[in-house]
Amino acid sequence: TYGLALTGVAGPQRQGDAAVGTVYVGLAGPSGGDVRRLSLVGDRAAIRAAAVAAALDLLATVLIGEDGQPASGDREWRA
Image (cartoon, rainbow, N blue to C red; front, side, top):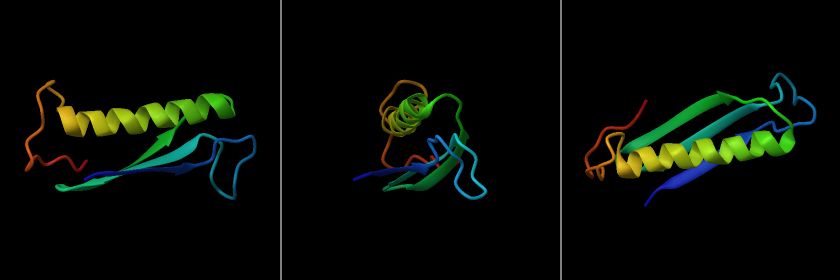
């Protein structure tokens, strides 16, 4: 089982100290977890689309592996 999460500021205005385009992607699974901070550019729709793409890319890398082969259950993937 894996958990995938997104949070951040898609705009149109910054939130506190967080600039528009600041997005965090979190992934947790059997081998641990990872959180990545992204700085995305574009309008609200573009930032949202790029955030979803980044989250799915992270999940795919964990599930499939960087070499295109299925990842083993004991694979270390924390960045």
